[in-house]
Length: 116
Image 1 (cartoon, rainbow, N blue to C red):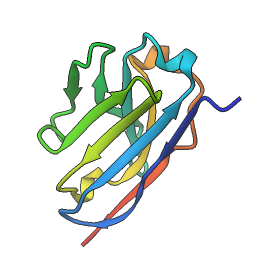
Image 2: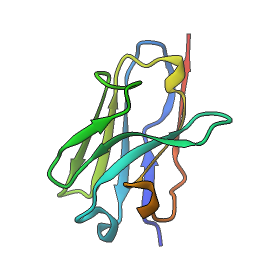
Image 3: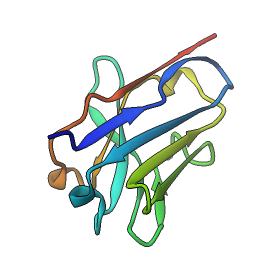
Image 4: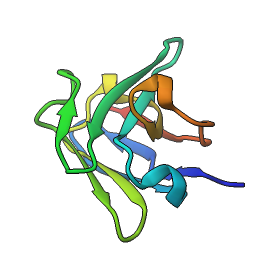
């Protein structure tokens, strides 16, 4: 049973943009705050952006002002608009519930690579 499927990653140059999408099973999407997590090479998975059911958002300081998280409740889809990408934004991106102790089985993730 597929519950989380991330997409939209790719290879971009510094300063470019990407939009990540995550389709989420309704039982996970409904009534839950959600977030985008990033796992950079050799590092742990960290939360970079989150959104509540009311649409309140929070961002890690490293992406504040450049990333925008949103959710489409009609489509059970979570988005991450990523602008002005930097080297340090590279990694595998995952969506899931927040906080992390509430996460369910992780999806495959989507890879973001940033080059000069």
